[in-house]
Structures are given as structure tokens and as C-alpha cells.
Image (cartoon, rainbow, N blue to C red; front, side, top):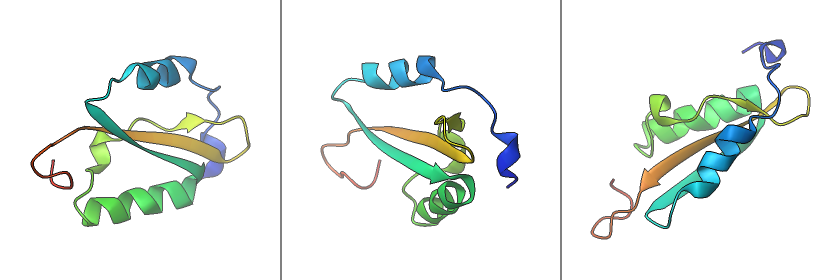
Length: 83
């Protein structure tokens, strides 16, 4: 992915929303270079941790070429790795 496409300012609204998620959610946060973040997302998809479409859109971190993406998943008391 071309890093120059990520030009958005830090998305404070998204960060505020994530902080409002209550204890019924686990959050997985990836922060890093665009290609690395996308590669980890694909790996986690193959491992059935989270589908690509469930991740937040990329949020600029304020550092060139670096993004933050979040996956929020409800807790499953019965099967913690299978929700």
C-alpha cells in the first residue's frame, strides 16, 4: 500500500469511541507502518481472530506512514478465542 495515501489527521472521534467501549469488549490495537499493520491483519484473519472488514479504518498517528487500527470484539465467557 502506498503510505502517501494516509494523510488524515489523528481521528480523535474514533479514539474517543474506543475508550467508551465497556468491559464487555476486548480490543486489539495495531500501530505501525501501513504494510506491517495490513500484514498482521491478514495473518489474524487467516487465524480466524478477526475479519478484515471488522477493523476500524486506518487512523493517522501523526507520524508519516504510520497508522492505528482497532478490532473490538465482545467477550465470550464460554469460548474466549472463538467469538
